[in-house]
Image (cartoon, rainbow, N blue to C red):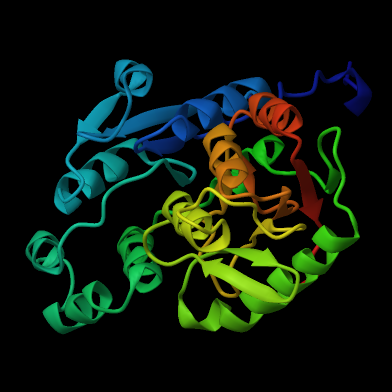
Length: 297
């Protein structure tokens, strides 16, 4: 007797290959912890590689390994052994000196290329650091790629909305930052109507806001700021968002209020909000608006 094809039991399907984990490279601040929580909510497997001297206690405790910032060979050795799906940098680190960069990566890169990276501004340095990983076959992605729930939505976030004077300042800030973005200056500006009060430089948003307080609330940073003064913060054109995503948090709100700002205008979909609930609550208490701007392209 012969068996028909329909009587033959099908071969069992092979089990799906396990998803390769991400590697979360943890620097300073709360961001790595927030990214880890977001990954856990989404069910994405990941491992933590902590940067010594920068990663906070909670991330050091859950790290599978720790490395020094300039131990390029050690970082690559760990990543080669782990074989991650992608590498996700998160958190702050201090920029090392050009000499330290040259010494740390000399065995992996031509020294002239390294010297150009080290002396070419923060954006070029950061892109060069990522290219070292990519040359070894590692995919590097940003927080915005793996934890989009941490980014600003579009529209009004709290109880307060910008008035007509603030809307003019927002338009001025957008135009100003768009014009400056090719020159590797900061991501933010404090604007009052058609006047730029302060533009962010390498010192960061908080120090720029301190300058804005001194310049915009004369005398001695104690007077009234011009009505409609706004902090505008946007991603720069061509900016590598994997390592330099615009961000605000409760401290930004407090410093903006001290500088006399009526509110904050940030880029929707490309600005991290550290502790969104606390940030919006701080803005509500201070009477400041927070709005996410849709910027096409």
